[in-house]
Image (cartoon, rainbow, N blue to C red; front, side, top):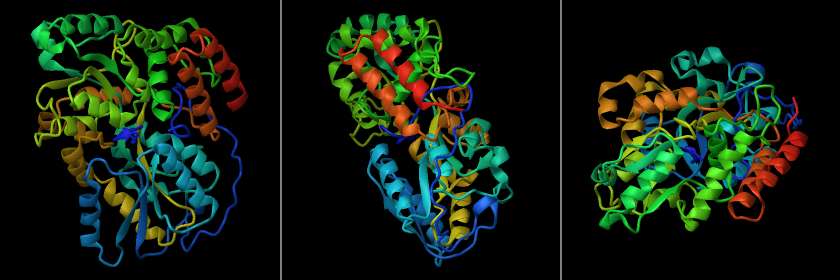
Length: 439
């Protein structure tokens, strides 16, 4: 789904793009009692019985079906869903509070991909023996990497995410416009479509711009889309550059010119999705989960059958997505860790992921599902989505992730709202990140 969702997609959740995985020294954390299950250092996962699955609010409506499938086959090891808020920031906060209290009330945690390092370094989740998860080699390698910290496995990828450009195909076709591959083409397309009588009041473009994790993602994608980086391959911040300035100015100028509506400064994933589904946006950057919801024919979407999906545009060509997704991990303080491990294997299986794609359009982590003819017929964006995920920029695995993403959000939000000149925002962010990111 979204990041976060999730996707994905969070003032203390997501992070920056980087070509190099960053490692930070663990900030400690009490070992605590394992709560009736082994698992430290990749050892045996012991204990069977009921467990609790802590996850963000299920906006897809399919999680109940997935969990019921497990419960019907495991009557003595039933899973109870503990549904946390929709906001990823609040999800993370509740999971951390549970861990700091060494509570066994959460067994399996649904983690945003960028939380792995923090939770592993603080010993809030249990190291997983890779030999107990033999299907890892069948998943997209980039997704498996998100579940590792210091080359050890702490979480299993269940959904992935790549940013996509949703667009009103009916209006573009009527205006004789092709899907844009660059920002300039998108602006030009918007002008031509808005010349149509039925589209004169439609807004051009929106992503996620509220001060939360989604802003970190959209900021990072804009920087990468202009050829810049937030963190370079040498592991050092490198955001005060002409390329990064061009990327940030794309967003800043979008708000100034009206290409991006003023209301979008409050958009997280769901408000943006609703605006697109209500016919108020021509172009919308969001995660794959939107596809199924926007195509519903129950009256909830005004654009069912009228839209299509394309890769994100960039400055001079195709843009770059930030890698999103969700992984399942076992709380270090959980009881019945053997059951928890089996539940993760069940939920990450090819069968369950296929069922989830069919119902929710969330991006799977099984490589084979992207080549499934039936799924490609139902979701024609799967092939480009696979390419997007494989080429997406992963975010740094840093223990002080919350501080890093907060710094990014503060800088980006200041520039978008006009309180800080873009160049000053990037210079200040460079200084801040240099103090936060260490190898």
